Length: 410
Image 1 (tube, rainbow, N blue to C red):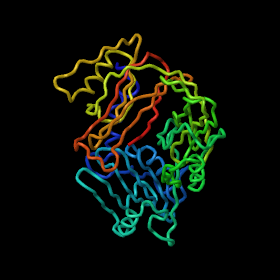
Image 2: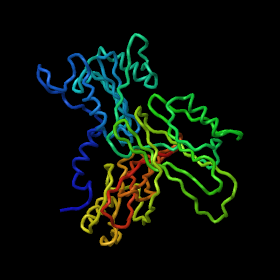
Image 3: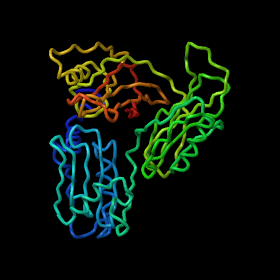
Image 4: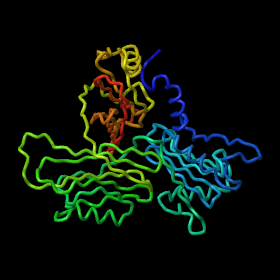
């Protein structure tokens, strides 16, 4: 039996999930059918109220929602699901439901064949068209006559994506502190304090604080240069979040200055209303060798794979290089001493996407890996061919679990 961990045996299931979330070749995603009789089972919503837990489960399990995943309750009668992800097909979807996920009223999606919109109940088309044009408005364009409520939910426990917005060794904030910013006014004050005495200051980033928040680590004044701080990982469990950060002395060929520095780092994460803990990590950095970095992998479903035996490695390599003729020989790996960690970003719509692994370290009994997904910047001219980025590396063999934290940059 194959020992590729933990994904090879689950490829059919992952493929089915991805197909369902990404439209299965162009069709809008079909929600699960509602079930149940006229009675009310324990745990069911009161008649006439949306089945919130069912909608949260639908959104939380979505595979093509890594860029946007929002739920709204409208007038206590309809539920709107707005999602977007980096799927090759049907990367954006907007669905209006009744009280249950099985009661789909209207849906729109972007497909390879072009935008598609349909309504099973035409009486909702006007409302749906208005919402589609005002997704960034708090009232979804519906006006004061309608009540729009954000249905918030926490992702599955584990590492979550974060977006670094600033890392600097010379902050105007010279007192050691960790910050969580949930409103625009506080963010502007902090930004101004950081750039105190510098001209010109960098422009203030625009943050949607209804859905996002800013976390920051300020080390305070330090007497020696060559010191830096970076946010390494963000872990969420329920409404609680942990920010892992690393303070390090940079290894340079120049002599470190004796001038005061004040290193800092800030990032944008999904908003949570619970506690946010900051944990300083002292990592054991791990060496690794890159085996292959490819934007045309034969593995087109997003996944992380850990390989610890030769037979499984041969099977994975053959699948990874199935688009290459003649077949390339697999790199030699001594699995008595090493193992392979591979990440596959999945099918992407053009050639400007890439993924790389970096910053490997062991913290406690967990091997942490940072995966950097690069997206095309606005206005970039990209090769118009599907791609499937992948990075395969070799590290020292270990029984410790491997956790991958994703950073998205453009």
